[in-house]
Length: 381
Image (cartoon, rainbow, N blue to C red):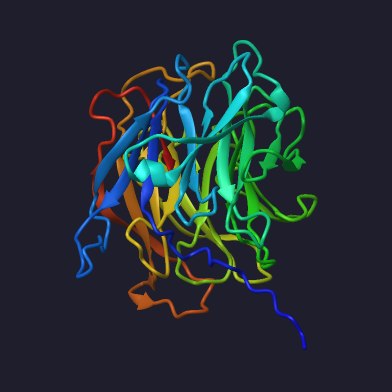
């Protein structure tokens, strides 16, 4: 008898909740929402119509004004997504990673599940933004709880660390770029290599080329693929997210957004088995003349069974690599879906090398911070 290893949860399967979290540059507040929409016969929402219920606000790092980077994922193994936060600015301070229980958030309560120090306890250099970036992924197969992925912030040597769900063990650590690069490492995670575990996607921050790399989650020494998300001369950095966007359930898709100094340019990268990633869809998601960049997230807030949506929020202009310089960024959450049509002809399942387009699902989905605008929007979905 031959045993066959099966993945416990497909990446396109939505969790049992529709939580999302938003934060802004310039303050330390995280707003946690539950997506709402039209209700079906069971009384549960059937789609995300751009409305949401504010569950609670959290201030994980009082006194810090560099924003909070957020990610959602089932870290506790109860099939409810939890909230993971890291500081966006930590000049001279250590990186405290905090995990908040998703079940408690749904009840509009705040329960800190765990807290630990990342980046080897080394604080950012004085005068730099510092901070970190965060993602959640199923790096170790066979467990319901997912691992926590941390990428170094601006002013630090490039470093990625992967921690066990409870934060007690550092299980992966590697440098995704040359040690001389100090622009920070944005991170995401999805299954790209076909080994039943999620892989680690990195995107370079400002100061270098728009370099995206995919590292095998089981063995980061192996690079699954790499590409420049935009023109190689662009040095504003890249924001990155990942999931199942094209509805072709083969390898995870990658969304890239231009960093500060670039227009609101988003690309979706897809790949067939044994093929390189290619840009299957792209769009300017707001005024092309806006040079604040665009942050990206991938989620299934409307519980669509075969594909997820792309969520975008404007960035915030930098001066001397400091946040923020103005209050002009518009904190609007927008949603896009990849259309499976090419010139009006449906793209058949299994057709990989086809050009798709992104369509705006609902404009101005949500103004998450009506109480004041302080910079760009970070999205945790």
